Amino acid sequence: MKKLFFILILFGLLNNAIVFGDIIYLRNGRMIEGEIVEQTNEFVKINCLSLGMYAKYKKSAIAKIVLETAKSETNKNSPDGLKSGVEQPASREVLKSQIIKQEGYLLYLPQGLVAGKVYPLIVAFDPGANAQAMINFWKPIADEKKLIVYASKKFRNGQNDWFKSEEKMIEAVIKSYPVNRKRIITTGISGGGMGAHMVAYYRPDLVLAVISTVGRINPFFKTDPKAKQDYPQSKIAVFLSGTNDFNAAEMRKDQQFLSQLYWQTKWLEFKGGHEMAPQELYKQALSWIEQYW
Image 1 (cartoon, rainbow, N blue to C red):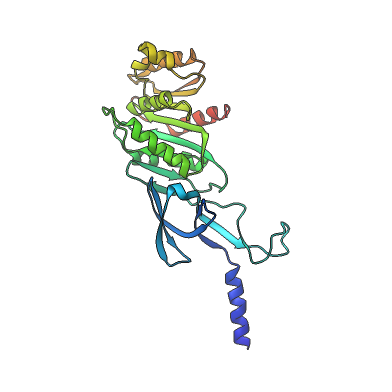
Image 2: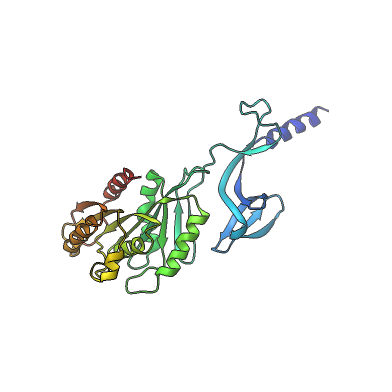
């Protein structure tokens, strides 16, 4: 009897322990718990803990995805009045940091994101499509500022057919992850800065601000009469330029051009040439942008 008694106690303790796992909330009301092992733009594959098998669910059937969720059973005497024996999501579900690898992009989720909240999204472009370099650079800033970072594998200097596929991927990320649609910032270095300006031009409904490092606006948008007339107004732009950068003069003209369109603009300069600025300047740029949120 004593042995049985201790087994029952142990079972009760385990039953009330914290359980870690990913959760998929379906639109039909079902909740699937397990470990998400694959995500695409079309489906999510999960190792279902309760079923002991893998299952795929279409993104269109999913209402919400919560990664690495902590859950616990609530005591019947709890102050919030929840019934004993009914599992409820923890009030603060913290995501672990991770890099999501997809065919066209890398996505970095910093540790400490809380389920139910939405966060700013950095959309980063490298002129050589080096998404990993962008993630590595922005990772410590994202950890401190709690930003989600999207880095393109598709954008590359000299390619003109990148925008439509990039647009679809960015939209998919916004729908699948806790992104604040009102706080999306495009950024890039050199030709990647030009790409960041282009996304702001074509999707002003999504982009709040641009942070361009030694990258100018494509001259077409400032010289073509229709493009110039259609250029979005009242956005935010930060220009980061090396003291010896060959694009500096044109970037100054870009700043003036945007200021005439009621953009809020800021110029930040660093010692150097055609390269990334010190990370502290990006933190300074973000802090300045935050005042307009």
